[in-house]
Every structure is written in structure tokens, then in C-alpha cells.
Image (cartoon, rainbow, N blue to C red; front, top):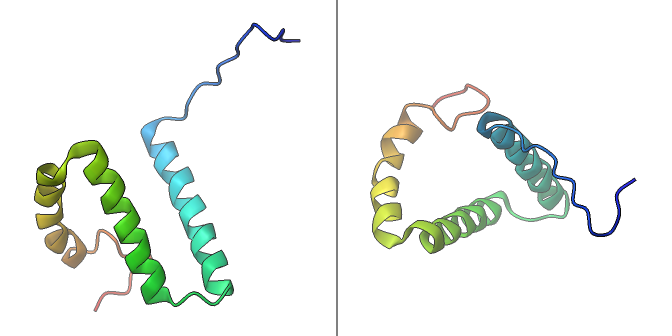
Length: 87
């Protein structure tokens, strides 16, 4: 039993496991929003806005702008395609 002045730290999952957990949380939230009637395009643009806003706050506009420049190629290479159907 822990006393009030004692802390117990759980080991954090490695980066790959954290990404898997985070993706599952986002996909579940996405499904919930769709079930509530949120338009998928609105949901997507809001998620992108939230992600970029957080990254700009952490890394700055210049660094995030440089990262964003490489997104087109990554999208076209299928990096973000979950269901393996490419257009």
C-alpha cells in the first residue's frame, strides 16, 4: 500500500506502442464524432488544425512549415493510407 507521500511511477510504453495507443484513441474518437453526425471533412480539417497548432506551439512555425512541405510526397506514397486502397 502506498502512503500519501509516496509516488509510484509506471513505466511508459516505448514510442511505437505510444503511437499505436494514440492512433487507437483518435480512431475511436473519430468514430464517436461520426456517430454524432459530424461531417468527415469538418472532422478531418479540425484534427489537422489541432495537430498543427500543437506542433507550432512546441516546435515553431518555421520547423512545422518545413515538415509540412514534405507531406505531399508522404501522402502520395501511401504513408497515411490505412485501408490500402490508393487513388
